[in-house]
Amino acid sequence: MKRISTLIAILLLAVSSAAFAQPQNGGQRRQLTPEEINAFLARQRSKPSEHHLTPSPGSIPIYAGHKNYGKKIAVFGGSLSVNPESDVAKQIWADLLGAEVTTYGVGGAGFSKGRGYDLQKQVDTAGVYDIYILWASTNDYTQAEECGTWKDYTALDNYDESKLTTQCGGINYCIKKIMEKNPKAEIYFFTGLRFFGQDAGHNPFSESPNKTGKTFADYIQGQKDCCAYNGVPVLDQFNLQGINEFNYSEYYKGDKLHMNEEGYRKIGYVQAAFLADGK
Image (tube, rainbow, N blue to C red):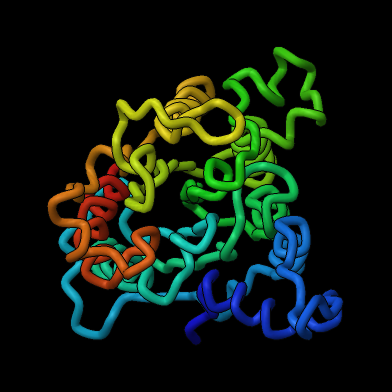
């Protein structure tokens, strides 16, 4: 079953906002606040039974014999990990790797605690799998959650729970929690993808920060730093996506944030090659 995308979910929220809204001049209703929108997103839940893919009949598993052939894979993230179009990429994994792919992602989610139905909650509710993929969204950056540092919520700060509200604290929490679930599991990290609604979304040298004073490139680096500390292999999607200001319209929807099926097909083969051996 295809799930509602983040944008549609927000539209549904706007339609159902009468319970919040108070008529203004001329009978107009006030706009929802960011807090109200995030409260709605936080009430969403992972739906793994609706996002389970297996190899297509007649598919040719070209990565048979590789390290991660035939494994059970769980995916966590925001809308980029769970929008209907993302099934194009995940079906490529399933077919080429002979894998089962189950997605816990929820639109609007980030690593920061409370950023939608965050990845911390997604990991908490997940079962035991062979492979866990942490797919970074843009939500921590675009919603100006603190980036933090690789030291957040580690032994170095005695697992300070106040740091769970940063992107980095959330990443470290997810890795720790997964290891507690299955110490033999493989964890892989997909960095955030480029987006084209603002310069910082795709220009690694941009000097235009969000409200915290950090650029998207800073958040990407924070993701890599956390993985380096924990020894987690990283697929640097930001730099390996092969999409830029000259061709993004071929691969992105009109919002310049979410990819269309062609975008996922382009990145899906790169992801599958990475997942075959985790490098």
